[in-house]
Length: 190
Figure 1 (cartoon, rainbow, N blue to C red):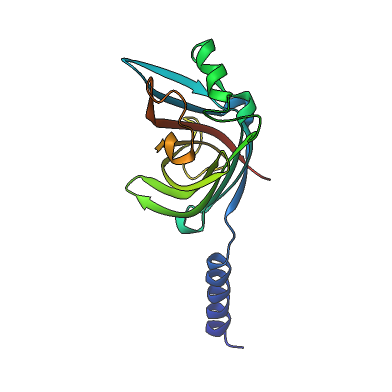
Figure 2: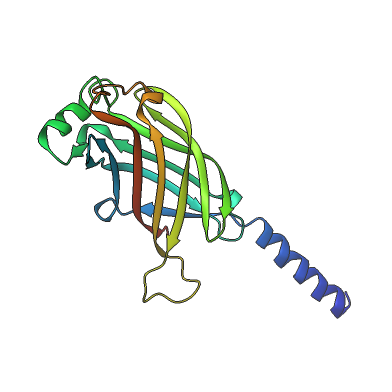
């Protein structure tokens, strides 16, 4: 085989392998990750957290459409900024943690949005599933080399109306809109 044919074959093979490369799988550092929320409480704001139980993230930095996110939260561990709110949050009128101990999010699409991405998926809460879009940004540690994606922080933000999921308790005192802030520390599986 002539040298140019061999070179062309190697180039074709390299491009073919790059085109079929799988997204990188990441593991979640649950101790360094948080799911926070806030909602209006009259003139004040109630804040809280829900522990991340599991996460399956696959990131493709060449084509974000190949990225997938699957997350499970432990509703039974939900906390709020003051005791009454924490008890009410897990009760049957809001999250109903006893009947629905898990909350899940499964991505259905990912699209670039400037320097960020919009991750759209199905959020299941209280047995009700609704589409939600989360604005997502990814950061490397300051001391990492350019292109080093082995250790990352993912920040996702969005809003949901709790009434869309049947979480209507205390609507005369607590706002319907819930603002979500997820900070996840992830490491490439090696």
